[in-house]
Image (cartoon, rainbow, N blue to C red; front, side):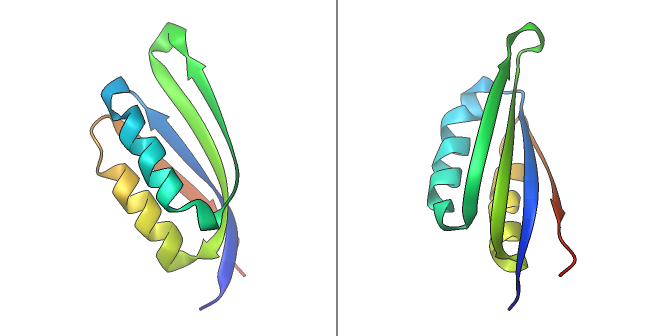
Length: 81
């Protein structure tokens, strides 16, 4: 299966989910090229952007696990090739 490069945006509104988000990201570290997290304290939300390089199955598995967490919203954009 072909690999794709992309970016995953993660919004964490339930701070109790932060530990699980980090655990999932650690489990998928082989497809993560880089990540940046910004706590937006005025709005009580953490914004995380993750650059990935992996198969659509691997990226989908990661985003699916993240999206099932309470108070976590996930969106991704991947290259077409």
